[in-house]
Length: 464
Image (cartoon, rainbow, N blue to C red; front, side):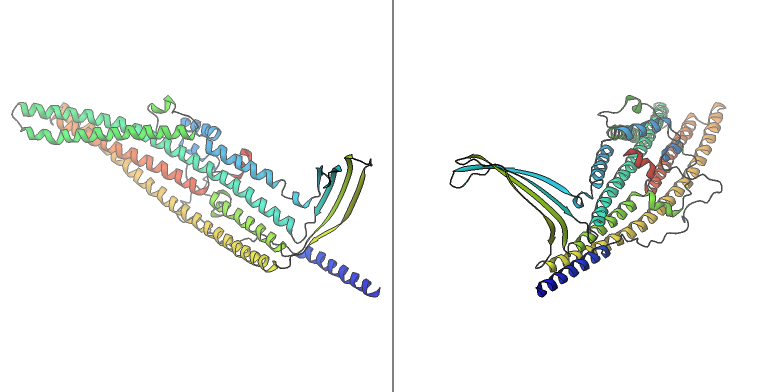
């Protein structure tokens, strides 16, 4: 009798120690150390410049038509809608992540037949089970679900940022291609006039037929360039149709569009904002949370699973030689599952999950460094294109002045008409280079805001 009491005391002491240990085991989510510069090295520091608008950054291009296309894509883009559904799926699981650690009730029925075929029965049973969330299981499951939800939400942000950037880039390319095509048409007309002048000189015996070779080849090259510009415009319009969920471009897109005018674009945000706006960094952080949850579950699986269980089974005869009433039996008590022979495997799995958590933390730090480097590179590219754009504007102004001077000299008979046509041709060449510089500058601005993230957390939450 005394031995039985002693064994019961040992069992109770072991259970108490297990419950005490259950309250102490947990796996906190690490916060990887990341060092960020105090300011952007390639950002122009301007006093009084307003903070950048990450939510509607494309409005700095001052193009109402572009704003309409962006708004349409935010409502109708298929990739964005698909990413949003994934967020909703992850949120549905996240809201029920604690379900395995709440009481569960199931009802089972059966109609067995006695082996001697003398009777059949109808059985109905109620089974209840409640696994207690010891050893950090509930928090670990919550972290796994949180990681999945955060990753899906950040993927939605990435799709949104990439989609808006692609819409803006395609619109810039469409506008630039249409302007190039119009300028090239003028250059072809100028080249045709120069060819007619050359033919007159040949007809008058003032030049040999060989002087027509270069102008004709130049005209052919210009026609090829115009065809390429037209194709680029069609390709950009088709891509815009895809991004807005349409089967064909709007007719208005294929008409002559105004090239966006970029003003007030300089971002002055501090580098620390990148942790909240850049999708790649946010996704890496979500993977850290998920890895911490998986490690917590692996650690918890090394310890006993403790719960409460209850069951009730009732039966009655359906057909037999002897009538009987309803019979039932029930049970209630604790349930304990203790890992024995596979404990080493469970320990190895926990160690593996620990290494994966370290890998996720390192990947997060790498994502931050890559984000900083990407923004610095895009800032430098934006300033470089700004310098080229300024130079191209100056060249166009000089060529425009030269055209006016050549027109005056031709009217006074001081120069031949061909020299006037040559000046206009050079002016149009400068205009082509200016269009290219403006498109490159606008595209560099788009690339910068894609690197910065280009979407606030508020806009993503409202989308969900």
